[in-house]
Structures are given as structure tokens and as C-alpha cells.
Length: 243
View 1 (cartoon, rainbow, N blue to C red):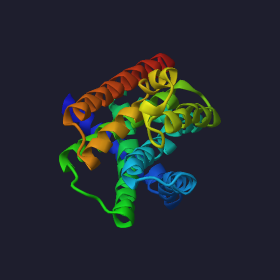
View 2 (cartoon, rainbow, N blue to C red; view 1 turned 135 degrees about the vertical axis):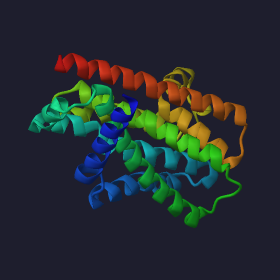
View 3 (cartoon, rainbow, N blue to C red; view 1 turned 180 degrees about the vertical axis):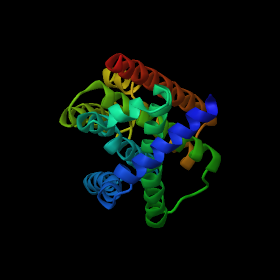
């Protein structure tokens, strides 16, 4: 039943938050890493903060959701905890929803803190609050689903970290966080359109800078599609491994 699945997912979420996510080193790393990149790019090429803030928030969300999400399942498989969870009376989908929610909640916490720092440092103009909240939630779900997929795709923690970075770093430099996608060569623009970070940055830019709303709605739809695709592949991959 749906209510049973929701209770199981909630239990997994609370367990993961307490055991893995809500630790001071994780929170500080998730905040300081994108801020360090913002400072580096600002010092190297001073520019309008309005152009960098959407990318900063998207990066905080990307690294916040995937920093632990990409290794939690791999780690639990390594120590035998995942097998115990699979023996519990819960469906595989509910288990992975709980895992995904853990990454989402942690990423949103880190990003809200980062947003507060940005508001104090640069100030914020007329913000479309509803669009901002929707973008943060859908971006977090897409990034967390990517983290789950990475975690179920490998067997060792170091492999998960390597694979996660293989996705994150190209997205960081090609997804519009620091360099507008329109300024990239044609081939790289095509690659950028295959990355969820691109759509997160675009929607955040509209929410914070009052850009065209129709573009942001399309970005949100694409982020939702990324979430579904990543999650479906994750469920199928873990189902094959545990069959």
C-alpha cells in the first residue's frame, strides 16, 4: 500500500540523515566548495553577481545532494547494511525513495544556507519565490536521483566517488554555472543540454533575475524528466543485483 511505502521511505530518510548526512564536516564542505569556486571565478574575472548567483546555488545543490548520496548505498552494501534493509518488509522502490529523499533534504539544507550567505553578501532583488522553491526542489530531486544511480552502479565506495566526479565536474564547467551555455562552442552546447545542471541554472536565473517564465517552465519539466529517468534506471539496476 502507498501509506506503507511512505512510512518505509520516511524511516529510511530519517535513518540516513542521522547516520550520514547531518554531520558538521558534510555540511561545511557542501557550503564551502561552491563558495570557493565562486570566489576563484570572481577574482579571476570580476562580473555581475546576478550572473554567478544562480550557478552558485545550483552547484551547492549538486554537490550537497550527491556528496553522500553517491556513496551511501555502496557503503551499506559493503558493510552488509543494505542486505538487512532488503530483508525488511518494504518494497525496493520505497527503499530508494527514502535514499533519494535523504540526498534531497541535505542538498536543500546546504543550498538554503548558501542562499542566506548570498543574500547578505550581494543582496537579492525581486525574487519569484514560487519558481525558486520549485526549481530548488526539482533540481534536488534530479541530482539526488543521479546520486542514487551512481551508487547502485558500482560496488566500491572509491568507484562511486570517481564516477560521481566524472559527472559533476563536466557539469560544473559546461552547465552554465560560470560560463553561459550560449558562449560555448556548438558541440559543447549540445553536451550541456544533456546535463541537468544546465536546466537548474537557467530556471534559477529566471527566478532570481525575472527572466522569461516560459523557459523556466520548460526547464522544470526537463528536471522532472531527469528525475524519473535516473530513478527508474536505479530501481532496475538494484533489482537485477538483488534478484
